Length: 60
Image 1 (cartoon, helix red, strand yellow):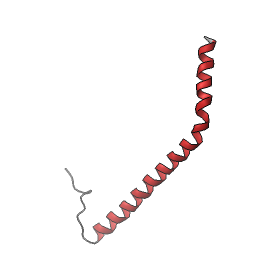
Image 2: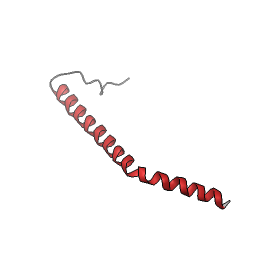
Image 3: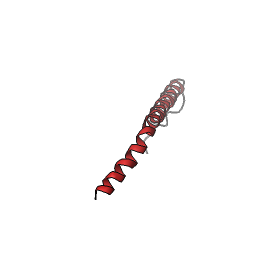
Image 4: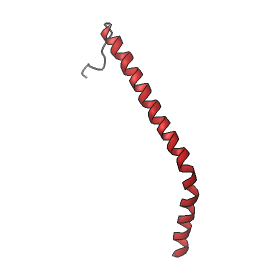
């Protein structure tokens, strides 16, 4: 039983050095997603104010 837990611990320790780079990728992904969303939101608002079709406000 001790060998199983030692094996799990060894596997976890081998993964820990990869986590900082994975965390950076997640931060970049969320930052990029938020940036694209804000740019689309501002573009859509400007388009609707110029008289464009507000398809988000239509009810099914």
